Image 1 (tube, rainbow, N blue to C red):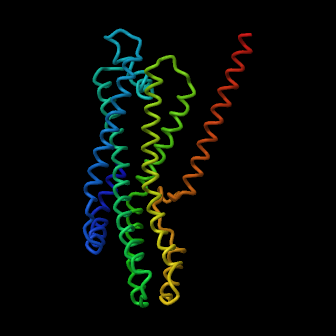
Image 2 (cartoon, helix red, strand yellow; image 1 turned 180 degrees about the vertical axis):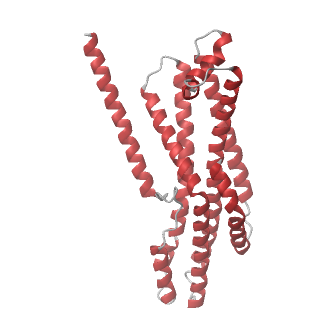
Image 3 (cartoon, rainbow, N blue to C red; image 1 turned 90 degrees about the horizontal axis):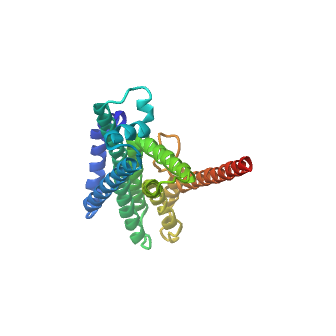
Length: 300
């Protein structure tokens, strides 16, 4: 919530820059449709996953009906009820805070992805324009115009990153933490079929949301590098100093969204994270095998 308040202070300036570029590039025909589909999808998935978690927790509570809520809250939120004695109103308050927190994190994903989709549309339009005219004989002033347009896009990406980098860091860290927790739970073979089913369902949802966030944020960096392929193929009749400067600008500028300015959302970074998570999974398997072996020896 604090980060949203910080974003609200920077929002008027960011929207002015966004509107200037949108006026220059024109109205995106299907952008509002994409935003509506994204919003409905994220809200529906988050709501279903939260209700599934609630129902699974209530089903797996092995207590009398009069004590279901108490034992559910105590077992689900031990960090609260280890320090506070359970009361019905406190239980309802904790459940409401939990629901708001889940939807707040979902809204973070939605907001970041919406920015990425908008930036992706701008870069697509720019790449199409420069791709259509690369076979023609362009004058240096025309290449300078392309380079100026690209600079506008880079500045907008930097402005967006300045506003949402901390939100992106929080969202990415939470997704990473959730996936690791789900992997850990998957190694604990629960006797309850409902709980196993929820673990699998929750892991699919968490993995899908993390993949969507990574896919759209990485595309911003990929789209910013696409003009390189076009500039490398410029015919000699159109090649000039402006093309060379444009090439150097793309190679030197690191147009990318970051997580709190600590890491850049690129394919190389994501491959590193995936490799780390696979190592974590292998470690869990080894620990499980070692624990099972010790238990077998002890029984013998």
